[in-house]
Image (cartoon, rainbow, N blue to C red):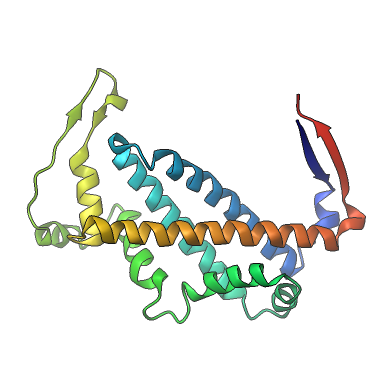
Length: 217
């Protein structure tokens, strides 16, 4: 087994004063966040006893995506960004287009209609509408599960149930799965896009980059 490395001095490749450098760095940070969350969602996807933890990472993914796509949308008209996108291959451009279309036009977009309400409801513990949200819920059976003596073995299922119902109302399971699937597809498109973007960027800067193949015994 072996691994490949591209080694460089940071400021010789990324100029802090250049908008393209800033853009690549910021989206690379988001890419890592997405990858960590995506991997965890995949690990939990078939574990029914981890539904609460699955929903937590789903919320984290929503929040990361909202912030990253806001950054992309804000910079989409920058000349240097447009020029860089123009040199990417068709598949990578298609991924970029999917990301833009998820939030633009804003009205009716996936981000506005599906992501923003969840993010606003669940990442602000202080919420003036919380009492009203509780009052508007249809009543439902829920539970607390104790499977051992440690805190990690006490599952406050009712709290996760409330989070889900406040976020999506009395949503059917199939609709929730469709939203989750669309989000996962967008996360994959984002990761694929920035991976291609960073490899293209490093190719442009290749005189400042050294490449190595190392044994990973």
